[in-house]
Length: 237
Image (cartoon, rainbow, N blue to C red; front, side):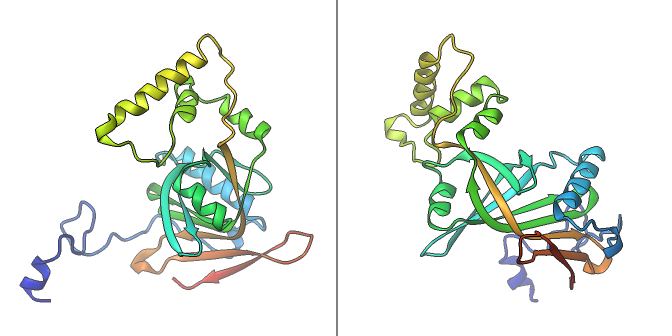
């Protein structure tokens, strides 16, 4: 590559804090078929617990991706995993005005991607989505800080706040209005447009970084049938 071509790029071959242009090598661990549990839920719980116990920063942070139909436009954002149960992975958000709400109304499918740098691991999840009941959502909502519960009512997530109308001031006025509405009340009902969404997996991949980009990858695929069995395959890196 000529200097002129290279210099025209705003970013070229970054390598973290290293002065080298070669990517970091992953050497902390390996993954074999014998280490995997037959259930991806149990395997995820094992990995998540290890990540949390070894100091991974906020291991519940996950990239949640959706796709709008018929355009096929894809959008992603980081959210928190709040629950794992026998059915799937649960996040909470606004399902009235947000971009992800519009996406899942046209296409009830989504993906999750976890990245745990400190242990050089990724987990990917793909599947269908389903809303939790109001009662289930209320149980989690009650655990949130009061300000966050107020904010859920006040924010029309992803809608434009025109600067000519006050920008952030519009949001802050809404917050004050909601605070006045629930003044003196500790119990605040979960908004009907807000709550839990479960990603019911059809595929879960566990990725362990290895040297020379020759990573260990195993994919769980849900098999047809009432037994809920999973097929496990090793993938090429």
